[in-house]
Amino acid sequence: MELLDPTSELQPEGRQPLPRLNALVGKTIGLLDIAKPRGDVFIDRIEDLLLQHGAKTKRFKKPTFTRVAPDALRQEIAGSCDAVLEALAD
Amino acid sequence: MTELKLVMKQGCETCLMIEPLVPQIAKAHKLEVICQDSSSFPANVPVTFDESLEQSFKLNIEIVPTLIVMRDGQESSRIFGWDETAWSGLLGIAFDTDLPKFRPGCGSMTHDPGRQAELAARFAPERLRSRRLNFDHADELEVGFDQGWSDGLPVVPPTPERVMRMLEGTHREPAEVIGRVPPDYAVCTIEKVAINAVLAGCLPEYLPVVITAVEAVLEDQFCMHGLLATTYFSGPLLIVNGPLSRSIGMNSGGNALGQGNRANATIGRALQLLIRNVGGGKPGGVDRAALGNPGKYTFCFAEDEVNSCWDSLSIERGFSKETSTVTVFAADGMQGLVDQKSRTPESLCRSFASGLRVIGHPKMVMGSDAFLVVSPEHERVFREGGWSKQELKSRLLELLMIPGEELIQGAGGISEGIPVGLSDRILCKFRPDGLNIVRAGGSAGLFSAIIAGWGASGSMGSVPVTREIVLA
Picture 1 (cartoon, chains in turn yellow, orange):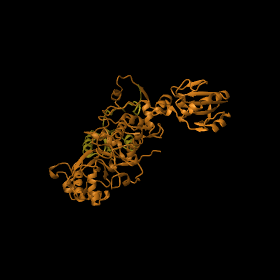
Picture 2: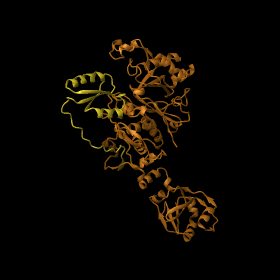
Picture 3: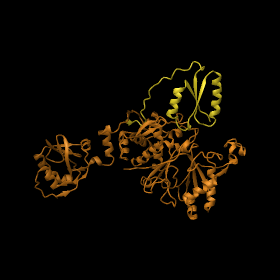
Picture 4: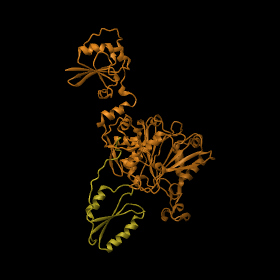
């Protein structure tokens, strides 16, 4: 029986994750709030801990949790941070 | 060099009538006689028996007899049916016959019901570009489950012939790209929509509705990605308006929100299957619904606009009553609303407001949109009271202005609620444009229905989208 594929037929390219950070001192960690309630509570606490460990932080926020982050925001994070933490709060 | 091809069938009275003339034509010209249903008709000339109909299909024969003039391997002209003057002129032959001067032909066997799709699948496979998969499975209905194409119910195997037949429902090219489907943002073609419509059990005449629904959910303001990914209950609901909803036999009457109508059931299902298969949105994957709702199998109905005294949804949204439309809404399941005592618009409106008040949570405001589906017996109360749909909507919104002190966190001994600082405000349950009314349902029963929406409405989430179903 011959059938036509109903799926997207995507063949995602395999990509290796970037090397993990060995230390936090002096590194800039992006903190992305996805704009869900209480995301700020979670990120405030994480930021305190990161600063105690000698990291620098940059805060970011998505316009709405219902949509993927805009390209410009993703590029800004990628260009200015060594790593990013995303807060999936509620 | 001129060559002739003459396509005939023995089952055609006109072909039988001109049979005696064929040898005369063969003597004067280089003639190939192609017969669709016999290897020995017409008599006294060599015949190519086109048993598979491949030649007839490739020559695009619609009528027999058809006489085609070929020059240097290319068709230069054709005539069909019997017209003595035209045939004599084309062939340069004076026929010595007492046949009627004119007689129309008969339908080609290539146009027997269902044959075009079958022939296209066999002899024009290049029209379909999707990957072809071969299975050697004892039960063809198990393939969809094995491949992960199913929503949990059996799917119709998408054979090339079935997909070709589905594509007869639209004039649009199979390869046309109509957008990218979340969550994978995969390219979606008309052909992929047709394949998923086959899976869902659609008829070809439903395809324009399915295509329009896909285009509607892919509009940015509908936010299909978030709707699929949310932990909330919601999924896309389709409401179809206009003459097409009736010509394809959609149900807007008794049990309109329930089972039993093929168009309602399969159009909504096709959209869901497309999100799953093309978009890659599956429960447990990017679909993070905590509970979901039964409408995520399918949720689609037509508005009963013929018997209504109110403007239809599509008219309210700027379309004419001759225009067919699909409206998509990020919907939860439905909640029944019973009122068998109210005989005045004022009283029934208060019942509706009390039901609408509690959607999501009695303290949730400006979150979900809602559709109120008013049944004929309830609509009659407003008809007799002289209330338009707009008047009902305005009055409902007035009744749904709620004091903040009832909504704040802690009020009523319930922690859920809006910030305490808003206690002196008066807030509407719905955002502006967040409440919609349609009419549907059977003629008996003083029941209406509330279809609440996703908790993220408006610019932060989803707004309903209406699109015209274009057939041409």
